[in-house]
Length: 63
Image (cartoon, rainbow, N blue to C red):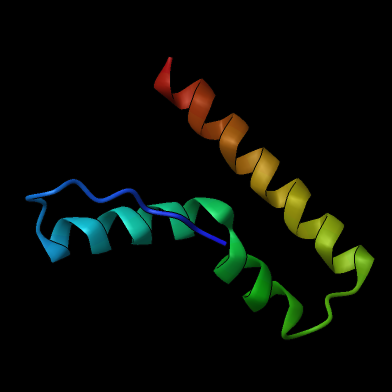
């Protein structure tokens, strides 16, 4: 359960923005999307390797 503390004169928009930020940090939506379709372990590992290569390439390129 997400609890958002709202100050006395704070607008509803700011409170909603705080709620959205907290909700995003929990990762609920990301996990829900990941569970919608099964991904084989070999495919999952392949994506991780590709992502790691890309990150490493960008890090080298940035130096």
